[in-house]
Image (cartoon, rainbow, N blue to C red):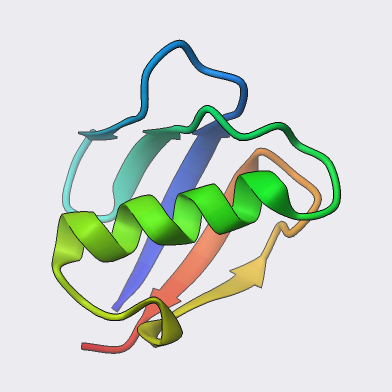
Length: 73
């Protein structure tokens, strides 16, 4: 499954907002340095979808706030 994610790093609280079936907004407390925000996004998505972190791959946008993420269910 491919989803499109807009990331909001350094957020006050960690949460995921579902916009529609394939678009999400992920707010993480992690800072956008050295991949820490990406780690936070993967951690939150693994909790949200109840899957292991290894099943989530950032396909595009590793240094951008807009990401395409592949989820292997």
